[in-house]
Length: 399
View 1 (cartoon, one colour):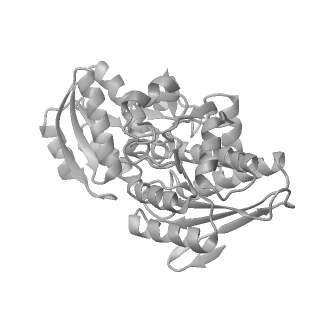
View 2: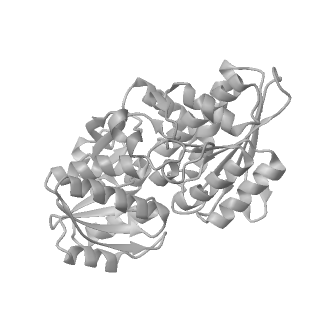
């Protein structure tokens, strides 16, 4: 473990005798180690990346791989400075996670200019593979389009036709509000209004009162992490849920539900790309992860970091060198994906990773048999339906 300035940065070297090159493959996990997204990304993303490296080395001995990590503090300027130092001075070949859309949009540009690879397993804005797409970036886990298509459509079709948004005031929140509004209105619903809040807001009382006064029957939470947790807790305290208003968690993670407690979160409808108890493979991955994380199950971001890293390393092995980032992405796009977390999948020319998405409802306490037994599966959304159709893309690579 190494300290660098005010940032915590750890470096783990996993080394085997080099087979085809003397270059060390360096991966940088740029994540939130101390802020509102630390539970759903953070140290878990570092662990998941290391798990992928170890799995790859078991199957492909002869490589030297180094994993570094740093805290972007959810600030584009901090994240950008770390990335430039990693690319220019540390020889990092690919960056993983970046669970902040504002930081991720900056990271995508810097990565393209350096001709490295950005494995965007954490950020949600669909603009990352839309108008801001890059030949060096793959958005792995989910995006605002897929999340809003699942939750927004399901609730609107079930009678939740009057929406009010509590929106995190940065790139992710704006994209989530925009994409969910599209699906709510397409299903015959109406958006009555919205209020935007700063990231890491401790007090949602005034925002919730505005939502309650709007006449909405659904409050869409276009935020994440600690903001979502605080909003749900305070909505319960203010009696919104008991009055019949439904909360739509538009980017909810299993770690959020665990922190809230199933008694508070029960009935929440959420869309996720991964859940530990879906099948034998997802359970096997979760068991390996939990053994390193004091029994905590992986979030979908953790699963995405593992899956993206494993596919990247296989592409580097095929390329014979980690130096040409855009060339490695082309190999990744041309090669089907397969791993324990997501099963089989593919990557489109716009950098969008395709896999099924899942609509869940948080169980009632009486239905749960263990601390992490939290979801009931409502529907599986096939990969070809979950994400924005390519013909609707604003990505210049598609045009």
